Image (cartoon, rainbow, N blue to C red; front, top):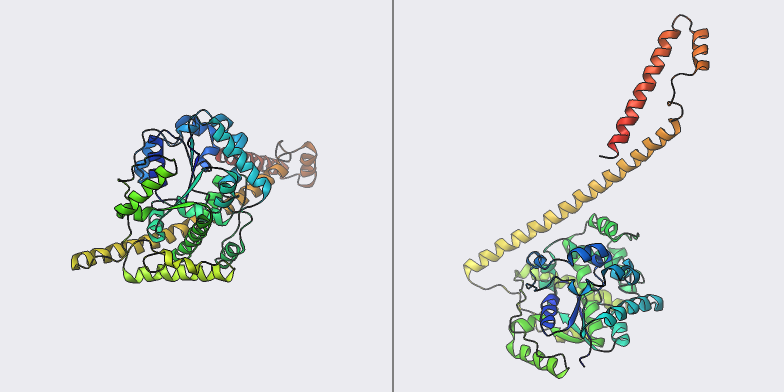
Length: 421
């Protein structure tokens, strides 16, 4: 019998390509078991994350929806999957947290109708305890960090996942330092959607955003070296000999004859100055890891190009292509500026929303405190006092007081309706 497969990777590493290939071999493939969308059992039951999403994410086309294997489990998912599994437990080695996650995976494994595959994108730091707890083949998909980072920019979601991971509990000292040094706040609540909204307002420079990504990339790779079979997805794309080697390994491991001939991960081409900027950031992260006792300089030899690049990012030399790359670089830089402006605007909107909420609370409190006072017209006692003290003008003052009360009631009515708009 085939052994279960555990695919580990960061986002945008080609994991959906491998997922699709293993599905065609008859495995029972669970797509991203720690994906926060699975927390909404009703949504999973209704859509299973439709397969037409692949076009927006530049994924290979799937014959069945992403979450199809969960469809009979959807209503029981909340009994096993909790919000903490997605990002909060990314680093933790605490026994109770590991047991809860293990129980969930074992539950999925027990339901699988064929040999299960678990395709993870949030387990970079969980590889070691998972390889110890789960017998089977653990495979890590490695991609060139710069190309992968460029692919992250397909939307804002992937940048936010980095911040949620940095927000996780039980972080190693190097990530605590990184969070504090970049002045990134911590924020935890019961709703993962609120956490996403909170970190959407965190404004980071592109350099700092890449620093966080590369730190997570390097940490995941270092963990994979100790616990997983590593597949270089960039080399798989451009090196037929390596491709044949991996296919033979898969057969030898009992995984099966996986056809990898159509793998096609994009290589980011960037100019020399831009490449140097990324490499400087990578060097800073390596130094930071070294300062915290994590030896990673020796692994430089595993990378064929400068820094940690797995591909040659040098642009082609012709004049037309050079001009094209300049234009592309300018467009990319402008995109970075727009991303920063968008984050600033979002932060301002969130601040205004917070101020409006505080004002609304103050108005509501004022309404509650004065509700009894304005619920009736001027009392007889007040009327008698007005008549005795201001006999000449008492009628007018009473009419004025009642008019004020009526106006207050109208204002409260308008406020009550506005709250429900």
